[in-house]
Length: 262
Image 1 (tube, one colour):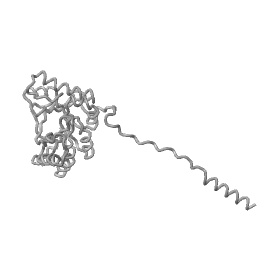
Image 2: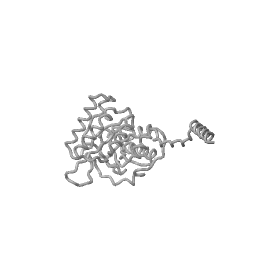
Image 3: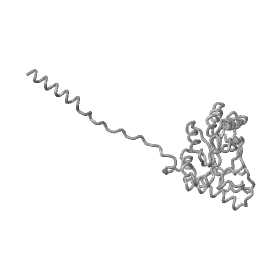
Image 4: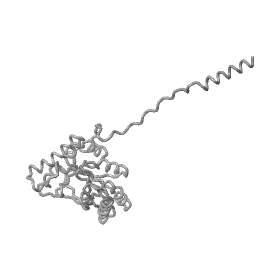
């Protein structure tokens, strides 16, 4: 009797050892981040009409704002012109990684070709600037054409992302009294710069020479308490700017500057 019971137990154990394990539920896939270029719903982070922008002063501004009103405070504004372009996604990724604000002065025609990058800039809360529709020399144009350059670029951003820019930077830094008046009527503050990295001169090169040159010129802004740095993210791409950006951010952060948007 004992022998039979033992044999039964051994058979049961053998059957259990060869039985397939109970199936585990498949893990739920992680939510994938949309690929750049994939249409996505847009959250309207920003003014949806010019009337929602604060009243703009007349004239051009060259220095980063400082709301702290502390005499020893230092601020720096990172600005990127002529985009969106091939380097814009990489610039956005670096700004996210270091958690610093910036201002993008976009060209209307460039926004029309890469609308998904405009949406990313808006959704990430970056300040959006108008840089005209197609980057002309505004002072050579009559008032009607100047106004059309500003209005068409703002309308393109509104179509793409549901918001409008409250800042304007004239192409080449060229403006006249007409330009200033048109920008003020559209409640856009006119922002130039106080420190030029001349990164556009790299002409698409990402060589160490150009990277170090961009860094060196950017660091000269530390001679000021509130510099505005001019950089680019043009349609053709600015790889030297992308490579230099982390070092520029670390340089100003190590010297106690607070990053601000325009």
